[in-house]
Amino acid sequence: MMIRKKIVLFILTVIALNVIFLCLWFGRQEKKEIMIKVEGFEVVYHVTNRDITIEDFREIELGSSLNEIVEKVGEPDTWIGCGMLWPVYFLEGNKAVALHFVYSDVCENLWIIELYDENGESQIIKESRIIKEE
Image (cartoon, rainbow, N blue to C red; front, side, top):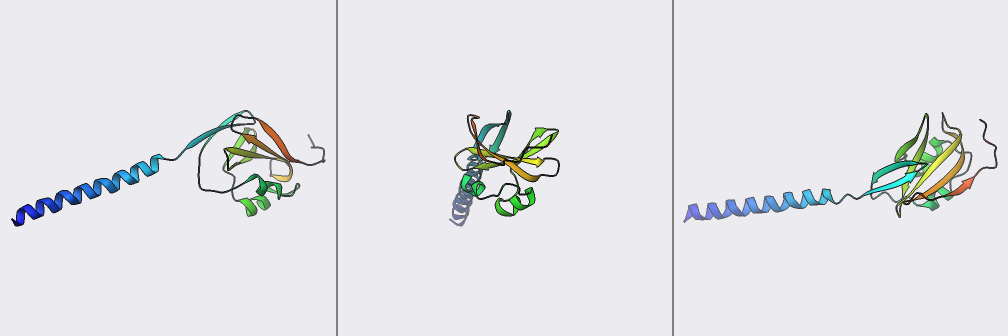
């Protein structure tokens, strides 16, 4: 009788551990990947709980440095480019924002904030009247 109780308890413990393991495993599998074409680069990212909106970038002043922007919205999600790199932030609604600086090599003097949707279409949200030095 005592052995039967131990066997039942062991089986229930194994089943409970398997259920917990499966819940954890499938919970991790739910991470959704989105691909957005930004400046001709296909950028793939995992959807997170980070709540950055386009309104956050409308409040950023042109002429800002990347350090000032990071203080307001956090670190960029990725960087794109070839030679000169631009920071990219992923937004709610499967959108991305690319930031362009007059001095790209040091990310100083924000010049353009450009919004991209998931099909690659873009629109300029803010643009400085400063003529970029080549």
